[in-house]
Length: 246
Image 1 (cartoon, rainbow, N blue to C red):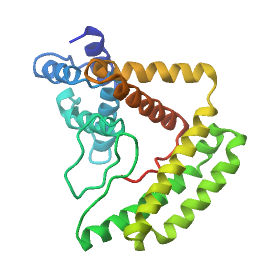
Image 2: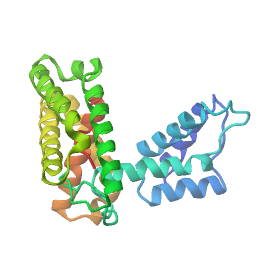
Image 3: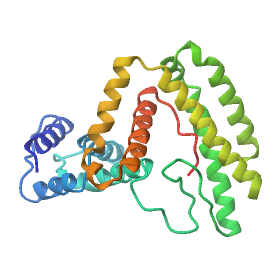
Image 4: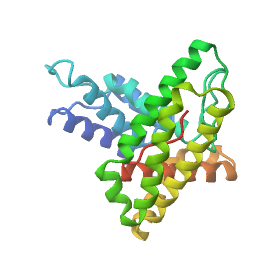
């Protein structure tokens, strides 16, 4: 394992433990080494550590410093979410709706109960997306030129929310396809709002995240994953929702 990766994890854990240093040695070293061997980008490992602390904070006050082993499951969760977003994992089992690497919705099968649950989940997804889209942070980061697009997206999301729970078959498929198109429009305006220097920084960060995978992917597949990685970072920095429903 690289010393830089290990020391960065150790420093971050120290900060989260209010300055109490817990060395990454022994079993802890094996856990962190496995993260790096599995291709977990350092940034995602640190985010997983943050998630553990955020998740545990409301439960009860800490009496002892947290060891890195306790954060393993959260790091793995963050890593899996990242890989799914970039299409770097196999498709889920049949009957579960998932986005393909290109972001297009796949076909789903399921019982009437599963469909009702999916309708409820879709409605909740749209409500959360509309709320986040209308936040001052998202609007401010896209700039005044995006106002018209934001208004159109918000109006379409409102209409979609009205019918999301009751849509089935072709009508539901049409809505999901529309969300893909709306998301593409949103990311287009978000990319165009970036300054050249900021875009260069994001491009470099995306390349660094994908470096462990470059030798494993074909040229086309790597470029596709790189584009998705850039979109994810742009979305993250602008505080924008994912409109596509998986």
